[in-house]
Length: 173
Ligand code: IMP
Ligand code: MG
Image (tube, rainbow, N blue to C red; front, side, top):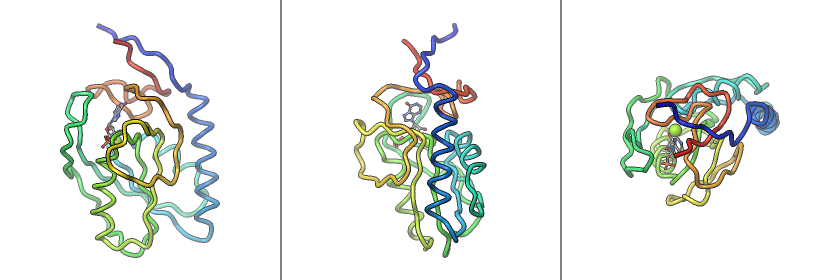
């Protein structure tokens, strides 16, 4: 059966905001390069669109950590499924995430990446659900703060479905 999806943020709104973030990041990293770490799989659509809007030199790497099963609730378990290809030593790292929910995934990730001695680590997320925060994480760039609803699209999935939606929607149950 098809799920009913309500549009929360339209394709136009998302694209416009990513353009703004790209401009802001380009200003903040002026004179430097930025090493984007895309958190798979959810971060991939956002990372690509964001990278295209950044005007300082960009390098890219990918990492996959899991904190969720097919369920919509956090299991609290975080593990590295795929590690980065490149060392981080001396790099200005910008982690790019789809969404920060409890914050557990990111606080764990930041902790392990710090041990690899980057010059700096910042965090950029397309969506933030501040009400749900359990772990304390400092987010440098936020696309949109959203209410506590389960969202899909633009990389975000519900049991691996809907990642390809060009907008952010809520699955109606
Ligand atoms: P956290 O560790 O609780 O912050 O979980 C973050 C991860 O959970 C995200 O990177 C997503 O993969 C997933 N997640 C959290 N909220 C949602 C949602 O509303 N829709 C889809 N995935 C979500
Ligand atoms: Mg994610």
